[in-house]
Amino acid sequence: MLTELQKKRLERYKKRLEMYYEAEEAVLLNQEYTIGTKSLKRADLSTIRAAIKDMEKQIETLEANDGKNKAGRFIPRDI
Image (cartoon, rainbow, N blue to C red; front, side, top):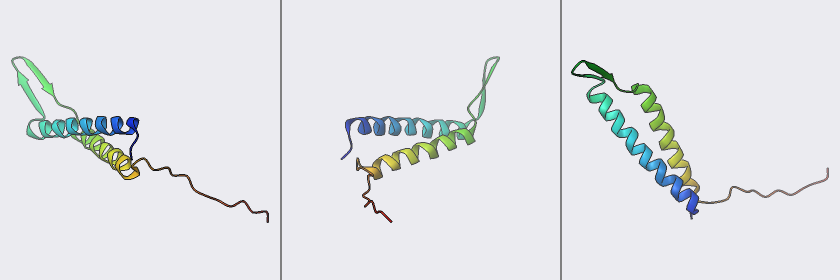
């Protein structure tokens, strides 16, 4: 079970990932455009895709962990 902090973090990651998907789509549709005399250029596609991969990895890690401790056991031995 995820803690409240992990649930909030997961929700933020998912929201951010959705924004990155929208940004990627906007860049794919039109990288640069002009309004009147002003020219605007969107963010770099490779930067957006790297951020998408990072967000997907963060989400996967949180969901896979599912709040479990990663503590292990060991037996001290005197050799």
